[in-house]
Length: 323
Length: 112
Image 1: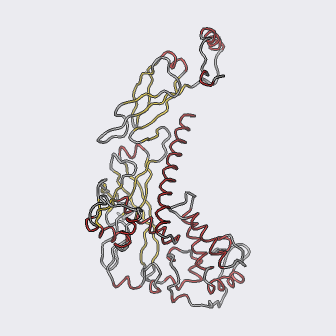
Image 2 (image 1 turned 135 degrees about the vertical axis):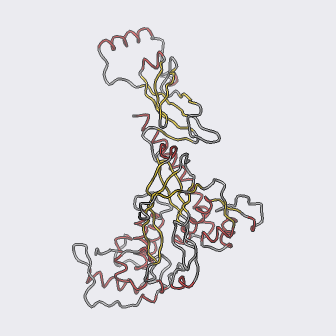
């Protein structure tokens, strides 16, 4: 088992005062709160910070942890409980936390394990008494990123999420649940689907909670969604822009021919009516034309450009810049 | 066939699906007084605020927002005015992050 350096987690020294520890915890809790942070693994970091604070804020637990750090931590970062170790305090009595210790690490369990029994009565209200009452299981809210094609045409997806369960020993433990889900066609960003009874299990014969999944669109290599419209950037050759052309452009799951008007500038938008997101008021597909240059021109092409420059001497593309 | 292999069909939640005050309290594991306070601080809102409390209906987004408010209050020890302001700022941040992501994506497409 790895040793957890709670001081390092909170970024404080071993001699830090309770006030310094509280300040460090508050700052990191705000930084890594899963509802606030965009950082990767914010959820895990938030749990680590909560676990570290849980131990270091309590003088008794801190003393016991400091002793263990002294005698149980090895140089390679691992940890073994010293033989015959008996903690100075009995945390099995519980009632010691407002956090949810069910999600703390094995390291925490090894040292302060007694407190995780449901009978200990956690601050969050879970405890032995749950068994004697009926309580509907918690709903679980999750998000699912779908590609535009998957959302519009339907697909089958694997969804993983955590639910809180009470195990045979009465401990509240998180369990990862994986389901194969059939996503119907025509899903819109922000729309919700429900899987009845797939949330946390109910207690005392009460109903299970539901799983609610909010759909979001994953970044697409070709398309961007803006409201009801689907945007796609289509490169065209300079001569297609100058002379006009009929070009093939991709739509979601298909392709269509569009007419590029003569004298098109880069950034010009063409609207394909009704080719956006379906619905009561279907959106459009917006084709953004972008003039692309070949990496290298032939000598003949360069000569033609020189002739073109000569013929179009009056044209100044930078008139707006007053230069 | 195990539960894991089974393909479950989902139920599409209608955009106008609602929960009563009692239902939202049950699903949010909280007291009605707490929900009423959140409404009075503008943290959440029933579909029609003009109705009496007993007639209030809340949509699914509001239920998700209630859960978020509960987590923030529990984990960061926030009072209600602080909670109201934080949620508004978080909404703005989320909206801006979405906009930045969308514009970056468009830029990537444009630059090839």
